[in-house]
Length: 328
Image (cartoon, rainbow, N blue to C red):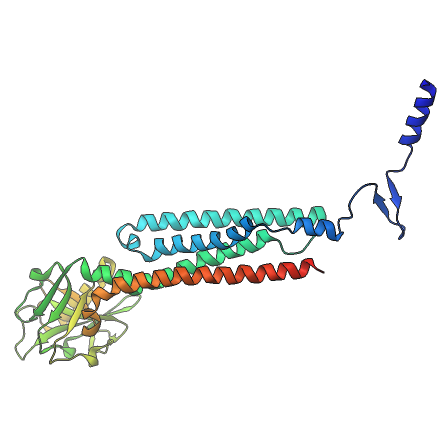
């Protein structure tokens, strides 16, 4: 009996692990052909949870990144915005590295070079993150920053540039000058650094002020050391209704405008004790300051809904493409 059992065991061990099929190639006993439709179908099965992740993940990243960039958090706590962007960048980088690793494994181990869902989700995350930064930055400059600049300081109306002094309006954010106010173009001056920083004083009437403390400003719209001020809106102001200026508060740029004013003092023999700098604003736009915040919110809700539908369309198109190639 023992001799018969050993004979059977030896016969089983001598059987070949592979057999030739009709084409003469070796195949595994009991194995599944990697190219079979059955295996291809099982590998490409998609769940509702996966579809939800494809839509909701990039959409949530877009919304959170946009909020960090375009909301008043960017103005009041910029460090929080930078931390949020840094966290997003780290997540995107990790996702890209994961995609590269899986792609390498997919090609080396199985020779499969077809697009993968990991590649697709990585691309969606990158598009969402970059789009949120670009669109959010644009809307921040157009609405949120302008609203904060105009409302965090005081608004003065009917300011006479001859009778008023800069020291009296150091907390001014927005100044509506008295009717009859104009820009004295022949006292303009420019200071050249990386840009040409241009200044020209506000005046009213034919009597010169004791101190020229209110200056219109602009960049690259005048001549250095010569009276030629042609900055935007100068020819469009209304002397009858008065001019409106928004205070320029950037400390870095203020020093260059002060140097331009000092050059004007030396060239024209005038005095500027406490110069304040303003960009000309359309009075109609200033009257709608309260609408800026509402517009920013409307933009956010519209983009949030619009990007959600964009995600749905992109994912649906990808699913249809996936279904098509799996039927081949």
